[in-house]
Image (cartoon, rainbow, N blue to C red; front, side):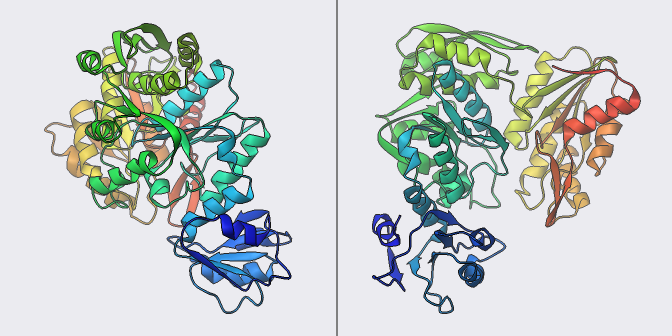
Length: 506
């Protein structure tokens, strides 16, 4: 695409300099790492300012590497005759620029956006399974994997930077994908990483205390989530929101024409014609219930997902699918066939009678839900939890989770998660402060996560349930500017092998 055409199609305030009308370069890719411009033609280098680096400092390197043009927030004097598009927010505009360059791929498929504190990933997996059960080629972009319809790759963050989002969408379009399910993080929405995307269906799960190191209070956090409904929706869009959540109720009120509710409260559901469950049965093997639709008809659902809170995620998916006219038998089939989500109550059974669950739960609400679920399904043994808070993140939540663990778990092991730039022992003390508020709480502090796993499993007895929480499928521990390979599941399997204990993943 010619640079002048790209410039004309970009929205918002911008200007261009250094463009010679007699020689207009073509743009075929948008990058924000100057190294990606080397040896390639048609690259637009975006100088966005992150938390650690300012892309403007690397613009000259990109120019020397041969980039065709630069997207920046101030005019740069040392780039020679390289054209510059100047705007006030490069981070947001680079996603839109990529969408234009890649042929606006989001417009070639049904876009489904999911937001909320907890439940996004599980709902994304359910939604992908449901649309595929209906015969629709579906891709997915989320916390665990990126699925372009041909293959899955590991995700490094929930919502990638704008050019990465558009590049993946373009790959989906080439692979014949007709529907994309995407998790939308509050950071991604607030920073404009989804510019260039308009969603046909959007949904909200809940809002609980999280990410307060970034957002200035819960209202700011909610405002970022609300953007998915107010700023990123396509013409004729429809949505779903959790009526059991106070912020979900606000979305139902603010967008009453196009948003339907789902609730665990049958009476509330009947009164408002929301989606709700009846005849609920939960066990260690999953959940069963009848889902009642707004027209009063019901469908029998069963799922291998463990925990009653997953019923809410299933209802959210059903509400979206129903608005897309997916037949109800296909919805039920997709729910039943949905694979267990990696790192979400991932279950291991030992031949010594101990059960281990690995879960991503890292927020107060998430930890409480998982602990309550395991208390419901365990037998007479003790309930253990091994958990640690991440560094440089929401320090206020640490004692809150500590208190929750103290109330619900029989045995607590405080450990490390991703300490980042904090001392792991300081983080543990913050968690310990909450545990100590509960009289008689039984706990240990073992900062080394692998040692904590080994110690817990060495002491667990037949009938005990051990929850290893906070990291889920992550395969690293982050210290400062580097990462050390580590995965909870690997530590569990290594322990079993070294101790000669038989282990089966269920």
